[in-house]
Image (cartoon, rainbow, N blue to C red; front, side, top):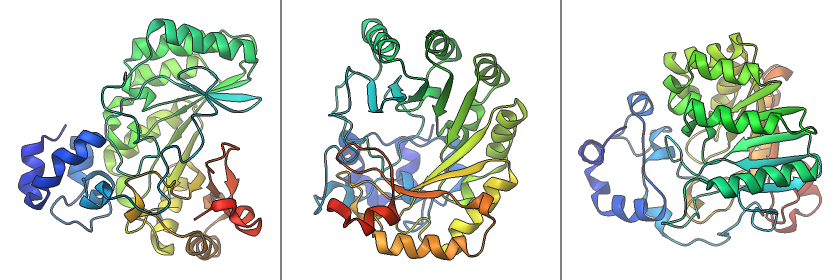
Length: 321
């Protein structure tokens, strides 16, 4: 982990904002990520994702405390249910690295970072009662848990009679690639079918250590998908998106979603308009293989779940930005 003194030596202009931003949403940067970015350049696309910015402390029009409608979709703590056949199990609020655009950045300081044993029991009991066939482990980042803790949770979930497969949503293979160990791959393989959904937004995130982590997952027989977020100043041009998607396919990772940025308080400076996003996706679709084209989706605040942006716009947006 990169310490604050080292970070501020690269960006002394952030000395006044670092503590204020960290008090709202943690500022944490892994060494692997730091080595890929130019921390002294405010316009660096990797730095923009992780370095605090004065703009994230300024309220903006359209800011929402619950931009994807998770509060109303939580039948019990640590579970999000928007569909009858599947549900999210939030196993932690901890991450190796905290993306400044995160739609869950509104968690309040002092909140519990992990479920208690009783809360986890209640969450798994709800999944059992609901009869879901797919459980998506999310957070935070599930790989912030130790292998032992993760194996215990996965084992309990896969033991539910209705659960046919699990999905693990994690940014760790990209932000902390040394977390992807042979033992981790074995746990996922042995408790499968298991799908892994990673999160990369820019071609430069795919460093050699990330390549090794992704290959380790794929070579273990685990299907790996990627979800990206469309971000101002990071990947809001066709060449960058096309390069990202093609590099992922080359690494046997299927581009799955391109998310329209969620309107959470603090990320307004990174948001892209929907018309602009649609134009970008059209340009990318015209130049890459169909294997390299993800769904461009918005996760609206009414909690209905992901909707294709083209449909959202054609239906009048119902508040879409």
